[in-house]
Image: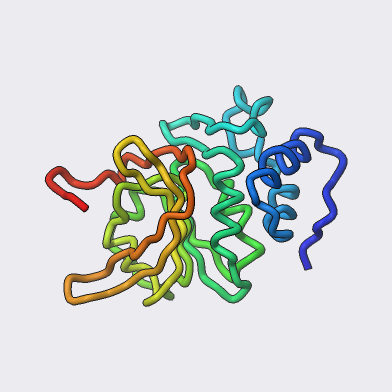
Length: 202
């Protein structure tokens, strides 16, 4: 069982939980426990360690970004991971979300956006997909790695608005698709590799 007692030894992490997560409706005990246990400062550049728990995204080396804590807390809560699942986490430069998820599922497969747009290399289809950023569209090569009806939690982009969305993988005569339902507007860093091709429209 996950430990749900908050450690008093990291005031910044405790403040993140109390003033950012709980006040935004992120209250699932397993999510609070994981975000209390994992040192967010270990997943940002040295120059950003002192501000790792602030309510904002952090630019990472290589051009990616670590979303604000409430984004990842909400992703985990909406995902409601089950211990028997295989999960894919796509992150734009950080392993923080994958580390939060790791003890909550049977297996975590980490992919960069570049790896996600290449053809699947086989293996057991994943039951859960978490995208740690906002995407205009999810590439079919990524969806092909998922089991039918697999759950999806991702950021989406529509114009200048980013939202968190949940949904399922569906398959029809035209191939694999993500059937998504918006949950709430959140400031989520965009994953440029998942921008829609020119000429593509909703």
